[in-house]
Length: 188
Image (cartoon, rainbow, N blue to C red):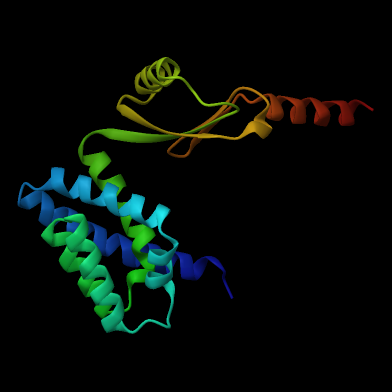
């Protein structure tokens, strides 16, 4: 069995829902509230283990999932198109693709705005000045506005790992040491 098959099925389902939501919001000039709602929903997914359990567990009935998602959407003030889609997803037992839906929608909105997201991993937290400079340099390289998603990985020792789309730039000390170690193995 191909292990990537379930992931591609989830991604395909999420892509279809995301495209529909995005097009409805765009046509009704409601992209700003959709962007806010998607960001809030993404934060809720990251922060709430209970929410992740409700959307992923087969123990909850369609009705229970629908009521939980409707209550959450009302409390968060999500746009109508997003709220209705979440209800439909609960009815069709498709809430398990919610994390992929959020990332697909964020990508569609960013693309519409002419932005691209760069994943930045550093040995220690970047200052605002460093983030601004890095964003400007990446914007010049890519030709679009760059939004940074920063995280810290102390095992890098120093430097950065930057991923923009399919490109990756690894200037970390950890990578340089690994490269040096490989060169030394070849010599000896």
